[in-house]
Length: 413
View 1 (cartoon, rainbow, N blue to C red):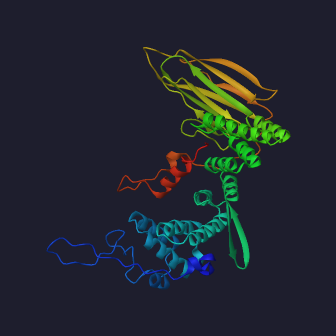
View 2: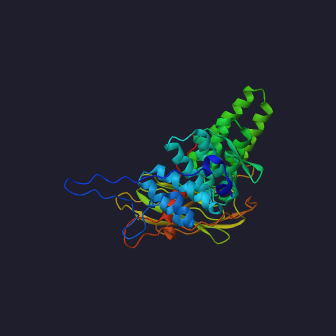
View 3: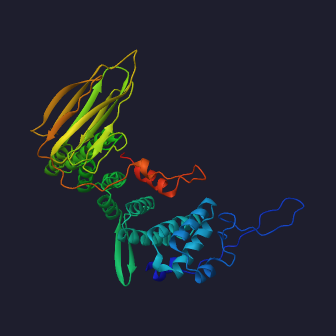
């Protein structure tokens, strides 16, 4: 593995980091201080030095990462660099991409040569590409972009292995098609590199799903970016390519089923859709594994909710409306349900129905010739995945990962 037989810039002996004693209060003798994770636990920084410690101890990778996390909290990048290098030297078979990207960041903070930082990133890309974690792939790709690299190559067991930002993002999107960050980063990559093929391929994947709370923005901005690419192609005398790009955009914007609920009055109406194969899209599960999504929920002064299924399975979709709140001084007495099938195609059909708020009846919509062929990966509702420490209000690592996964900072420009 690269940690054991990797480049000299990474596997070189790690420097021993001395722990300096804290300045004692006046009148008290100075005593050496070693950072500790918690009372009664082993010290975070071993007294014998990192190299000697990992030469003698086979620390499990999960415990090692807990140690590194604590060192980050203590703002000790030199210890982080020394610890990771020593761990990789003696336990390289347990190396992973996250270790190498943390090493790259620590080395940069420590002012190490750029070539060594680049080498660490190259190994991070290599291991991320061989792994199965889309969050790590996306994180490494982002770090490569920040450092100005579009691709990096390592020599592993006598063979060169190339990892590119595009490959990492494509792999992440393949594993987690229901996650928007790899697709948004891919669109931005296409914009920067003026790559119309990547642009439209990423937009097609993005628009194949509804995105709760962000759908309208994503669709509008995706259209603008594709149109900019088309104009560039036209200015380069590639009108045919521009036409193909815009035709594919029109196809990507088509949706098999759209349900819009609107009303007048100060009320909160809950919109839920039971899909043909048994799933239900509602407030608690805004997206289903069958492609449907509650992308907009209206309340009070924003009277409007929208369910969309860009690519859906054939069958009956049962739409249910439930009043959650109705202001007696300004009540909503009825709502309008607009149902659109095969939106944006010659077969588009629009149907409008009236829903009485006092006695809302379910509405059944039959979809034929739906275009979905594959079920999405299952993702448990957030309420089931929030786990808190019984002794504190702090969230666990699993919740933090979930939050990062579902609310990425990356956006379409």
